[in-house]
Image (cartoon, rainbow over all chains, first blue to last red; front, side, top):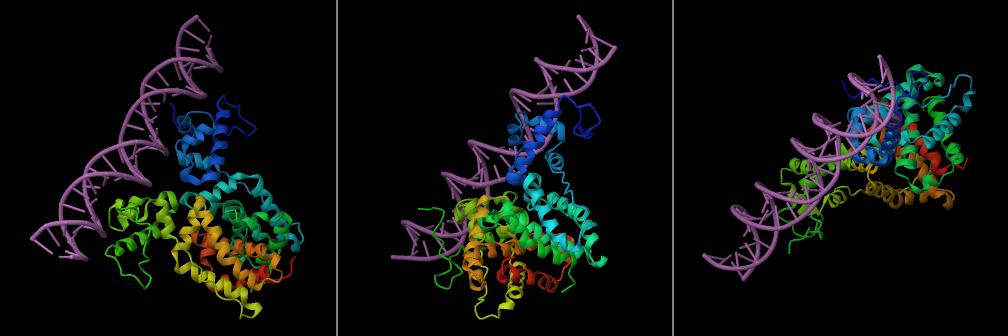
Length: 200
Length: 200
DNA sequence: GATGTTTGCCAACGCTTGTTGACGAACTTA
DNA sequence: TAAGTTCGTCAACAAGCGTTGGCAAACATC
């Protein structure tokens, strides 16, 4: 049998011997991430990704089934959210904005996901899932009223994703020009207020 | 001669007789706006737009030259920014957020532009132009220090575009669920601070 | 009524896309 | 060494794309 190899044996994970083709698989994923981040879903063609990875386009199909499967495999996001429990309440804004900026600048997957999410339904749903599973839980740690958690997490998302959009996707010059500390100094109070301040 | 008719005689403008084909032109633009807003640049095909407008695809080419020309003609954005001069300083945040929300909900062109801007270079540059020509000037009316105008306008853009992104493009459920008054109540102080508060 | 222009449809072009299947080389196992 | 599996290339496909040019009907002008 020679299917699309949907049972990927987690090559990077410690256990399991590394297969001979895993270098190729990794090269494909790296190229895919780069293309998706730079051009979005439709314009990142399988042929271009294969060329970047220096292999034949049909290999992409064999290892990831189809383009959708490649995208799903390429963008696996772990925001690695910090634990806000043992933190002074007044620091959560600064810590979150700092963490968010760091994450975004070292990880092109996030830009890829945002670019794709803007035009692709599957991409948008993926982002919704990340928000629900990784952002809302940490909001639950600091929100005064549990009932307000979704709304407060949502407000935080508007500010942080708006920063990512204008800085890393649209690249508005004055947003790009801001130093990281400036961004933190301005945005931290906003996030702080959305998460912890009493309702207006 | 029978060129792409680049000298469009502004049919809707009061002066100038309305040509026989202007209904077709308008139908094309309306269909294009809808498709671009719903699917982004690449997936909004000329064939689909023509079908929506109930005409032949070749008509689109004759009237707008090519797909790029169609996009340029379809998304002409006027934010109709209010004059902040005769306004109490403490009201600018609320007025701007309210205006922004209204604009965005009655005008699908804005969603089209944001969706396209995320994957298309021309779209991103168009957004930069709107920010530069329509947003920065009104920031200039209320900013204390002229030198800080770009940065403060940029911060405002991160918040407002982040709201548009999560509410109208990605459609995060908790953001969609917010009532307009809630959005204004939460975001107005943020915008107010970005534009008028002393630097942090 | 004849002439020229405008409006629209039709058929086709060249190209790119995702995707498939056959086949040889490289490697593994016995 | 022999058999079987894995890895990779090549050539091709069907479909869809933006785009083009020709031609017929509708209209305007004289």
